[in-house]
Image (cartoon, rainbow over all chains, first blue to last red; front, top):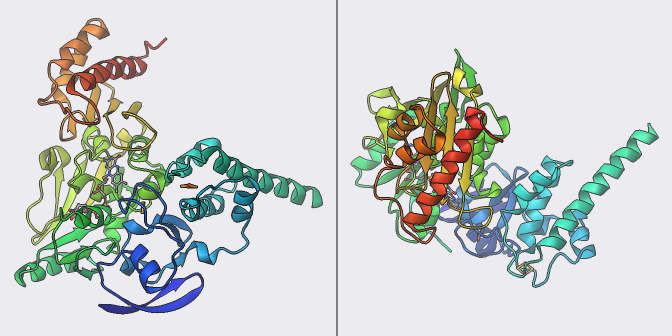
Length: 160
Length: 278
Ligand SMILES: Cc1cc2nc3c(=O)[nH]c(=O)nc-3n(C[C@H](O)[C@H](O)[C@H](O)COP(=O)(O)OP(=O)(O)OC[C@H]3O[C@@H](n4cnc5c(N)ncnc54)[C@H](O)[C@@H]3O)c2cc1C
Ligand code: FES
Ligand code: FES
């Protein structure tokens, strides 16, 4: 067992875990953050996606010990974000099991590529699986956010 | 959800990594080097990897190097596939890497892990096989540099306790014309039915393949057949006679289907590079 501090959703959380424990396990079972979902546990489905230093990571493919000195963001740390609103507006979920993973992936996409083209959107979204097949609605939600980004930028330029 | 138990070590230097391996081995542990860790975690959960100590090499600076120095591209083994894609210093490598798994998984899967892994597709090795790269390997006697063709035969042939530190590639290869296509059974992500990478040098067409057999390979004999004169379909037929056997016959595709797909890929990709494409 090691006892260490993990920075999760802006808080330092002291936690004891085995070095072989995945980040997904520690988030859910030790920190009570159950937003990241266990799906395949094999890197295929993306339900467990979180952000580590702003990059999307499948938390089943990462040891918690690798998260030391990194900034971890889970769905619980995203409050009232544009991605969450876009999901509601575009009916981008049905059962909702895949939703936290998709949202964390899209959150990272928008931070890294605020002007993402169709190819980049497809690249990112193909990392997650939706068993309810809500892909079109999810894509619409992403595109609405990118459109908003573009309009904001155009507005800013006119203001200048 | 918990993987099996092991201790975790994070050496800062190549020497410390090697020393740790020897020490842990001496203590009767069975250490393994850990890079992205995705295979160790996922196969470990299925009891297909057994270790009680992992040595994480990703804070060793040499393993994270990505630069061009003295006309050589240096690619550190612990770089994630997306890091290599984003810098795009070697477009053929970016293309081959971008076919592996999916974008989020590639934030974690590393170049060295892909090349040294048990999962036999090892698609990231194809560009290095085509570009006659060198592998820099660390072991108890320090660093050694060897042509990739000498040390990669179906898999990277490492001595116990050795690890891959870097791959070095002559800068001339970075800008040569290439095509790299991955055909899957279905969907846009997943293991290859066949991945074919083709590079055109001043004098020849080079071929490297993954997914056709249970190992990736540079197809020297097939290249010779393609290099002969004559119409392309005839040269492709001759090349197909030099495919290593056995060809995979599994859920991704039968061996007959794989050969059919390969034939068409060879005709298509080579004609694109030879400039006869309609
Ligand atoms: C969801 C998913 C999809 C995948 N899809 C593909 C695909 O389409 N194509 C493909 O080619 N592969 C694919 N893979 C396989 C993947 O590329 C390999 O499993 C690879 O080993 C993972 O890299 P890693 O850095 O995480 O390796 P790790 O888990 O760190 O290591 C894997 C093995 O290599 C050894 N190793 C790692 N680095 C070194 C080094 N520098 N020197 C010596 N030994 C080392 C380790 O000891 C271990 O035995 C996929 C894997 C996943 C999880
Ligand atoms: S649970 Fe992590 S990718 Fe499916
Ligand atoms: S909404 Fe049900 S799995 Fe995606």
